[in-house]
Length: 102
Image (cartoon, rainbow, N blue to C red; front, side, top):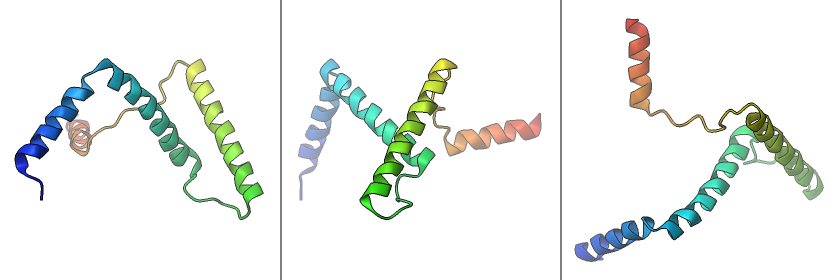
């Protein structure tokens, strides 16, 4: 089992590394890729293929990519951000309470 002070030292070192500009630039790329994958799964349901066979699945992926590109182009042309932002459960409850009291 790890000693407590070595875990804390590793956490401190990792947090210190995350403040560097180089790490942040590298993370922006990763965050962009993860955002694209999340959007592909949410919008087109790419977790499971609807068809059997490599050719049909490939075609499904191509259509999904085209759909994502069109969605992103539309959002860019309308100057609307794609990410709505996350609202926590507590914040949603507070908003619901405000709506009821109004």
